[in-house]
Length: 437
Image 1: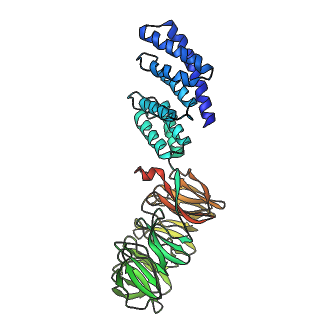
Image 2: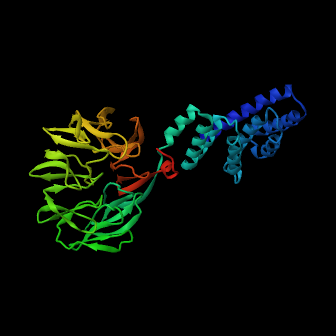
């Protein structure tokens, strides 16, 4: 902050002296008075007496001449020198606002204002200024400054022992060996009192406590109870949840109406489909027991919640390779490994020991260069370089430097990250302002 202030002060003084000479040549009545005030202020500022220069320059900017903007620049220089004095930071901010609100505002004033607020760690204010400046001027330097800072984040609630992925703005969280439900920014919604908890969908989550399985609403009120004896269960979505009963997996509705068809294993429903295993082979089945992909694969790639089918795309393992199928048709592969697509963006795939990204047609969009990766969500993807995780944008550029022990995908501008103190949550300033990523 001090280095930045000294640079601006020096430039302001030079500008003031140069303009003084120009005004002296072409002085008119208003300009003459303005020049006299500026000249006196320049002399005071050259001696470091900024507090007495301020009223002179404040009067000078009241004259509307060709050099009023130069008087404003000199006044900003004085304000900057006095920022540590009460009231002058507000004066400086007000003058910046005046300049930015003009129809002919120049890009430099937006950059100056943004840098000022960035140094004060008022990142949302700085980003809003840059967006306005870009809209008004289209300046490439402002765009570059915005890109450097648009993924700034704040650290939120935590810490938890473990968390899953965010789903429908909620996330399963574990504390002291018990499970609860939190909002996407980590604020606890359902207390960590359960032996197991499912994802929250429609109006309920399925929980297990003391070998009893029941559904609870967002207020943690019991709304349904499973009558059968279930050893465990999967995640709840599309009004379907899998239960392990007598060594077989059965589907049930949120009201615990059990289906009659059983599987060796079954995942979480997404887009009406789930990975399922019968007779030692995997396929993808819908809620009506129709198979999108027949049960003839060695495996179906699922995310940590158990989802395999998003945007009609599925990654299936066969003959030692992973292949992409879209709407039941083979599209790309083989890959060494893959992560399922999210609702928008590229999927992470592995080849040659490194991770890259493909689009829904199987075209490589970001080269294989990462040690680990998750698929894109909200135009950001978690990637690992060495031992640490960070995030890249859709161009493959680093958006958030690798700094976390582990990282999960963003949803609603929030993402869980693992620190030395446990799982916490970060929130993107821009997303919370309603700005699309």
